[in-house]
Image 1 (cartoon, rainbow, N blue to C red):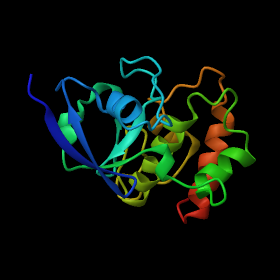
Image 2 (cartoon, rainbow, N blue to C red):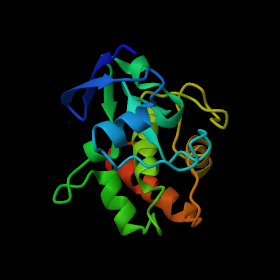
Image 3 (cartoon, rainbow, N blue to C red):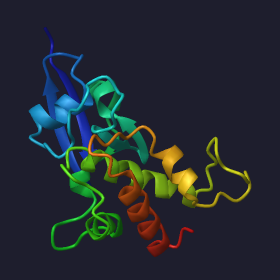
Length: 173
């Protein structure tokens, strides 16, 4: 079987991969081929959000997407959001509000929330947006936009508080 060469820009670094099988998911390419284990494999069916990454700025479930589909794309994983000594505002807010318990869902929650804040900045409405011209960041808006990311420990109230704080710090209200 022929190898499939792909190039991804992951967290600002160009990475080349030779895949023996074109059916390798982006999640498995990250974890097994590039040793980037921050992105978690939860359900492997696109139902829990633990595997959320951003592809060209849009959040996706990496367990449902083939790596070969992203040749040339820019991928952001949880490792690209901040450093232990220089946390992103969202990571700092998660710590401040205890937005995690077991922590398994946290990478997907952080990546998804980062993308969600960008969606709000770009004024993308959701199904619960009251005003399609100017989207505001209500708790209902946060819950709706984060509904694809499950937390088995049920830290949802803390996650909403953390997202609200981080969004406010970034000038989104």
